[in-house]
Length: 120
Image 1 (tube, rainbow, N blue to C red):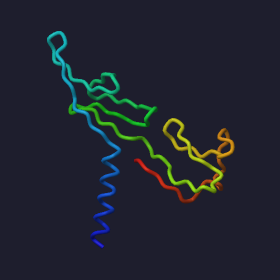
Image 2: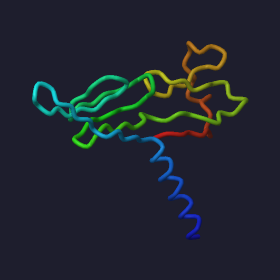
Image 3: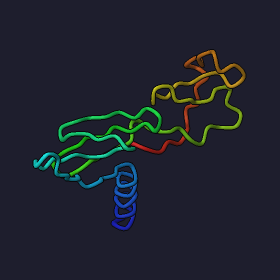
Image 4: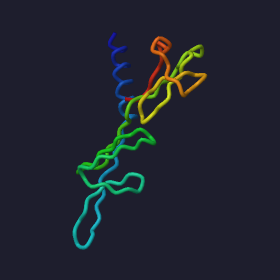
């Protein structure tokens, strides 16, 4: 029993760890003053700034210690092969659409009951 709980706990810790990253804050002297900032894809952010990157579905916060980024939402996996619907991401939100016509939303009754998911 205890070994099962340990495995579940380690799985949760590993999943959480994989969804968050931390980059230390940087400092630079500008016109004689020390300026602290974080960088994200070449963009400089001041401490207390927040950034949402919809290309990779991440939210990043610049603090006095550095830039912390975490995933927004989750990715649906393991959709049954016989499903008439597929899951797509629109603005980092999961949307169910018809497999044969992705311009149409999937009716609730056709959404698979059992699927897998990864992320936060």
